[in-house]
Image (cartoon, rainbow, N blue to C red; front, side, top):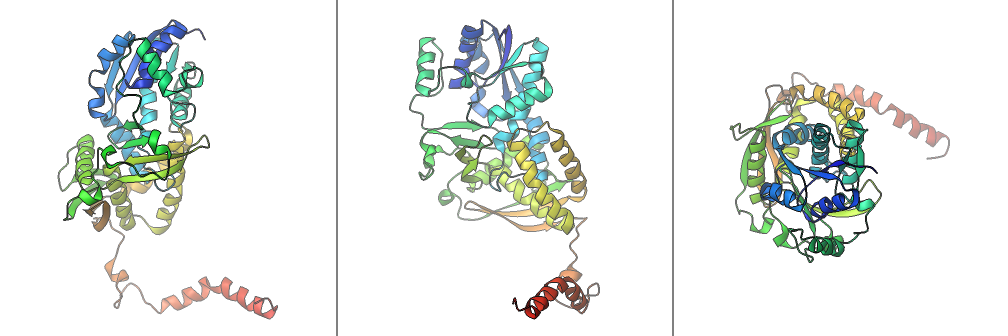
Length: 403
């Protein structure tokens, strides 16, 4: 591969720190680093200087937090997108945005190629490369983990030591971690034993339920057209809303899950996740839909939510199918406006109240008492018709001696 300039998705961790030098040695090319700020907090400190010291010609660092929350996280909330009914897609949502900005920088820089540090066993390689192919098919793609011989952490550390590359972790770090404003994921190392409980010291965003407050915390979240806009009557903006919810929910032990998921490549993987704000928003949003969407629309949306989650997990954010589903979701959210009251207590989050100016909930119909709008005697005819196929089948079975 004839490469003169490559743009690397750079985190400053062990893998990408080694990749900078490896690219220079392997291709004799210029390396431009790109780091996306999607809410890693202190992980971005000193990143530009480190990239230059390692051999990069320059390092872009772009604050994508607002775009990430507004255009990715909130879209997933509106879609009720949860992979395999458990994983809230924190990492999956960030990758297409990072890859998109990486492509934009590559085109701006006149680069020949883009590069990522995802392994050949995981999902991130798919999310990066499908975005590259969708947005800039003319760019070459370099995936070091699939072609180099540095196929273990000890070899990476040896390479870093040989070339004087500073790395932020030690050889005995027991797991890998990925963080953004929506979640923190933990994988690998000691967590590869699915029967071993994670150490409490590992968690950053959440307290253990045992150490959470002994009194429940109540929250009110306002939505407009399916988008969360306020907490307890205050409208702090998308990024600050996530930060506040992460703090409040995390202090109450809300948002931890420990799961084994099915990767796209066919491997089962154990992951531990902290998603405090995302957990609260998913629960609140789905609850508000219960009084603002009609039954059949809600049921169809629930079915399509599973497909929407798979698209995100499988790296197909820039596929037409996702855009088509978004058109349907946008239509369903026109009346998802109102307030949900939540109770947070020792790891649990429960909706305990909901209201909307466009509610479809009518107390007169729902009441067990006499209703002007609903005559219970009408149910007799409905049940005779609705149950007719079952009744006919039972009669015929009995007549034919089959029942």
